[in-house]
Amino acid sequence: MPGIVIVGVQWGDEGKGKATDLLGERTEWVVKFNGGNNAGHTVVIGDEKYALHLLPSGILSPGVTPVIGNGVVVDLAVLFEELEALEARGVDTSKLKLSSSAHIITHAHRTLDKVQERFLGKRQIGTTGRGIGPTYADKISRVGIRVQDLFDESILRQKVEGALEQKNHLLVKVFNRRDITVDEIVDDLLSYAERVRPMVCDTGLLLDEALKRGDVVVFEGGQATMLDIDHGTYPFVTSSTATAAGAASGSGVGPNRLDRIVGIVKAYTTRVGAGPFPTELFDENGEWLAKQGHEFGTTTGRARRVGWYDAPITRYATRINGITDLVLTKLDVLTGLEEIPVCVAYDVNGERFDEVPVNQSDFHHATPILENFPGWSEDITGARTFDELPQNARDYVLALEEISGTRISVIGVGPGRDQVIVRHDLID
Ligand code: GDP
Ligand code: IMO
Ligand code: MG
Image 1 (cartoon, rainbow, N blue to C red):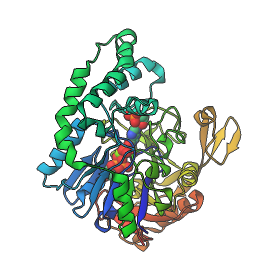
Image 2 (image 1 turned 90 degrees about the vertical axis):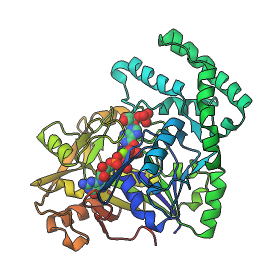
Image 3 (image 1 turned 120 degrees about the horizontal axis):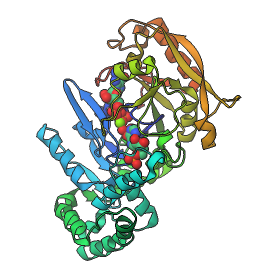
Image 4 (image 1 turned 180 degrees about the vertical axis):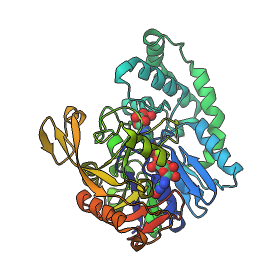
């Protein structure tokens, strides 16, 4: 079972980093296939806490070769900052491989991300401001700069000239900003070229060879299904394919190499940034959940919006991604609630929707139809088998499994690497 994809089910921050790390000891490769440093994964190993943005979470496991695939957008300054910070803490980062076809985030993209958001006013997406959207826009418009361009100065210069031409008109005439010179971008990018060179290779070929040998490869998705450019709550989404299909296109392996699709889902729901969120809570329950769950973004530090578990979203994510197993995280956070409401369907202007509505305005008007489950008060953070959970916690998990339509193979009962209950092995 060598090709395993990890994807977020909801709006991100479900605990994908921890899930990848959990597989680390039995995995040879971890590949990041989409997004960039908009992602934020917190991994807790013993007393040590690591916050990763651009690097795959597998970098923390000594036996793993971490790979940044072609579908990722790379901010080189962030790449080296993260590498240096990890090395200073004793993590060996020397095996990192970087796709020669990954696109590069420049200063121009970061600037545009920020000014475009400001110009959207009330229609703001609440992006992370890392230049993600403008870099993918350039990729699709075929004026992007790729990693391989760093190694030919004259080609790099031509491409940067082409990419800046329209952007400078926009920056100066529309956004009232100063223009950006070709030299400043080229000099900045070239300053990284020699350090980048040893990491760069044809990562698709490398991974294909690994899979043929029978190595275990984990494809680690950033963001999540509801933030996917095609299947998420457009336009309140990120600009990449965060669903399982992106694992193939964003790493250059065939889709038939993806054997198992693992969806990571929180026992409740959170969202950062703007956009519809049917089960969102605005009362003291919401404040309580946010506090218990430490729901502050790893990347921007923003408070996450919180709400109850939304089963139609898990069913939708299962369908879109072909999810074979769910990892249910943060079950411990619900400890202490007398009753736990779960969204089983939506009411849209008096009509019942059992599935996620395909039309944006219906989803904006969806209110949750809730079913209540009895809570528990026992501390579950030390449970390591399903039977050690209180009856009501077991019943809650079994009910989510039933209404979500997919088996829950792993349950998270705390942030630590070992704080999990494994019901079905993810690698077998
Ligand atoms: P990612 O973006 O999907 O990797 O998730 P983040 O790292 O942004 O956010 C998930 C947070 O939940 C992190 O702070 C994790 O340490 C924490 N976490 C993961 N699993 C559990 C769990 O089962 N229980 C608790 N209490 N925290 C968890
Ligand atoms: P991980 O991998 C949660 C959200 C932003 C914004 C929207 C678009 O940690 O789960 P972008 O900067 O990507 O153009 O912003 O997407 N967003 C995330 N929310 N977790 C993430 O990543 C996110 N990456 C982007 O808040 O609403
Ligand atoms: Mg995160």
